[in-house]
Image (tube, rainbow, N blue to C red; front, side, top):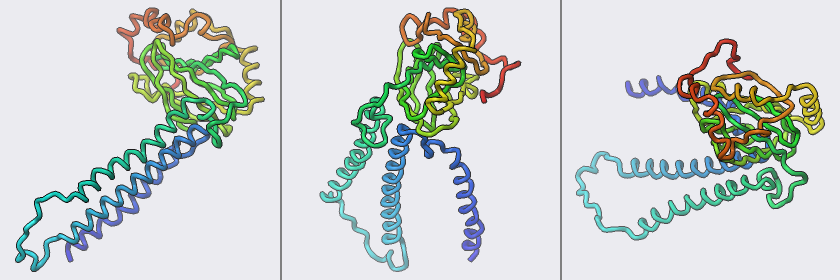
Length: 317
C-alpha cells in the first residue's frame, strides 16, 4: 500500500512533462515548412519517426511479454530450469533479416531525397521531381566570415550584409563559401543546412512558397561570435523583390575593396547593403580567394579572436 501511494505521488509528472514538451513545439521550425525543400525533408523526418516508433513499440512489447510470461512467481521455483542451448534456425534468420529490412526501408527514401535536393528542378518541386524549371534559379553567393554573412547577387549587381531578400515561388541557388573558418548556412523554415568552406564552393537549392520573414543562422560553431552570426530572410513577391533591388541599386553606396577588407576583420556588424559586390575582385570559393581575409588580417586572427561588443547590436533584427 505504501509503494502504491509513493508511485501515485509522482504520476503528476507525466502530464507536466507533456506540457513542457509540447510548449517547445512552436520552436521546432523544421516541422512547419515554408517551401518545397523543407517540405520534402519534413516528410522524410516524419516517415522516419513513425517507422522508428513502430520499432520501439514492437521491442518494448516483446520485452514486456517476456517479463510477464517468464517472471518469478510462487510455485515456479520448484521446477527445474533446463534451457535449450542449441541454436534456433528460424529465430536466427529473423533477427538477421529484420535489421536488413529496417536499414533498407530507411535508406531508400533518404537516398532518393538527398539526390533530389541536389537537382534544382526536383528540389523545388512539390508535385513532379522530373518537371523542368519555369525559370532559372536566382543565384546568391552566400559568404561567411567571423562572424557575419555577405550575400552577393551577381545578376543584380548588389550585396547585403546580415540579411537578404528573395522572391517567392522561385528556386534560389545559394553558392556557399567562407572567407575564413568553416560555417554552415541554415534557414530552418526553407530547408536543411550545408557547409561554407574557404577555397571551395557548395550549392544549396532552396525555395520559399510563402511570403514572410524567416530566421537564418550559422549552424556550425565558429567561436565566441557564433550565437550572433544570424540573419533575416525576407521572402516576398517578385514585384516587391524587383522594387527592392532597384532601390538598393539607386540608394546604397558602392562596396569598395577597402570597405570590404575592413568588414572581413573578425567581429560583429550590423545590417548593410551595397550597390556592387565583392565578387569584382575576390571569390572566396577559389584557391586565390581562400586566404584573402587571413592575409589582410593576420594579426587579428592570431590575437583578436574575441569580441569587442561596444556599439555592436547583440542581434540582427
